[in-house]
Length: 249
Ligand SMILES: Cc1cc2nc3c(=O)[nH]c(=O)nc-3n(C[C@H](O)[C@H](O)[C@H](O)COP(=O)(O)O)c2cc1C
Image (cartoon, rainbow, N blue to C red; front, top):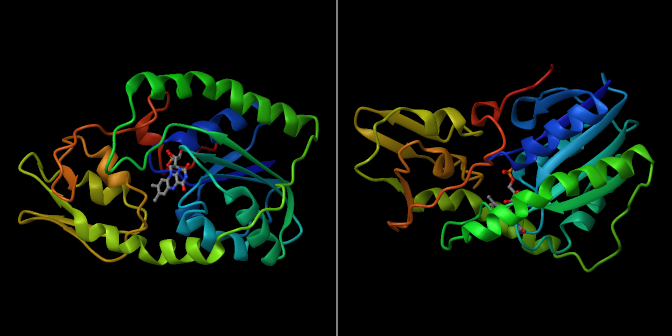
């Protein structure tokens, strides 16, 4: 049985994980809730977005505790420019003593859109190409056409600095008058960083900048730096309620 471990806040990585499950089988687990080390699986697949040319905090924390003898295949997805993220995760995994067979990467729609808007035609174009890109990766996996990222100057120090600053982003989140205090933001947050009461929504200091609350608020009531931006993104080809869930089939 394959283990497919994923992190996702807006569904792109979950979409890839589900396609992987459809074609090669396995159980899907959401990384923030996954406490084991992968020993129960024959092979491990890690599906993760790129954050700041690196990896989300939860993926960074997961790697050192994974079983060192299991074959691991990583699929990264990124919004626009992944820099040396594939090489960075590969080096970090090696440092953790892991058995990395392959690292693939592919583009998906950008979700780091706090300060700009992705034009709809561009977003649709990327979504249209997504299945072909995922399937090309799965074909490579099935043919054991494995890829090790080419060596590059990796800006590990810069990535670590960004990672250590992510929690600061929550200082610039607030809610506007459209907030109905439904509690969804708190429910989707992977770090329990948000509390909702009759008095309002409070963002604490454990934010990992995944932007799940920002994008998935049904009222678009979470705003960044008091901007009036109204565009939000969730992968339209998945059931949003499945983001953050395990899918065992
Ligand atoms: C904090 C943060 C940092 C990001 N950094 C990058 C980046 O360095 N390069 C890039 O191309 N995309 C970046 N992205 C975009 C995501 O990698 C991309 O949209 C991904 O598909 C989101 O996956 P998800 O829907 O599974 O969460 C970033 C997103 C977030 C939230």
